[in-house]
Image (cartoon, rainbow, N blue to C red):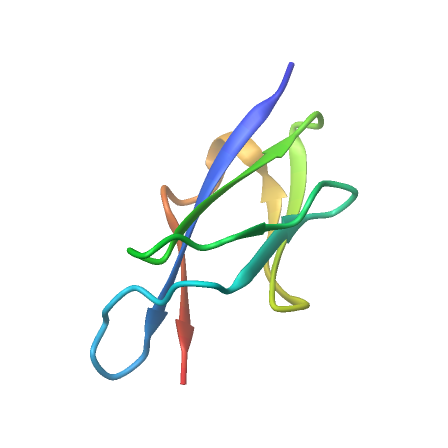
Length: 74
């Protein structure tokens, strides 16, 4: 079974979405955030580790992950 997890990258001050940031799950393909700051990563495992620009932003159960995972960029 595959699990899709949404990630949103936002500016810490303005809280607006940021495009073009690299998002990937451990062992998965890299995707970039769209114009609204959103990206979706897919995992074949119920346990997922998500990275934004190489930094771990979430590790745990895919079904318990916040929807979306919000990463604030300074």
